[in-house]
Length: 159
Image 1 (cartoon, rainbow, N blue to C red):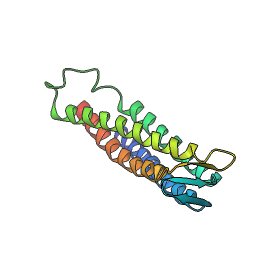
Image 2: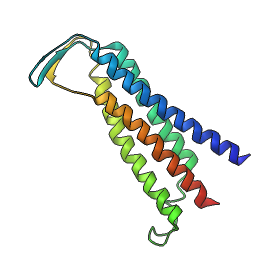
Image 3: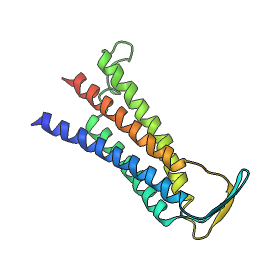
């Protein structure tokens, strides 16, 4: 039973990360469809409610996938022995855990910046903010890869 639950939870995390990535890229596409005027490095554009909702959904799914990953993966690699004396599986688990946190920080920041630029009730002008939502979406896919690697190595080091 534990094996089936593990596979299901790992699959759930991947589905959430892939969905978040698709939503982030779709938000970028929706943002690019609104009116904008560009002059060198300055840009004036109207916010997109659709891009805001898609970006918000992507950010929530990414954060939720990360929370679930850390709850089911546990802190077994952090609470154990020194990293140099640890088994290769435990070292891989620790490396993947650190990388998931880094990807989460960067990806979530990109999604939040891109989403917040579409939250305003009126148009804004300023420096161009290109591709925050799509880069955040791509990082959701990367988060999914490192999440699977972390979960697989963390559960393999327990057995």
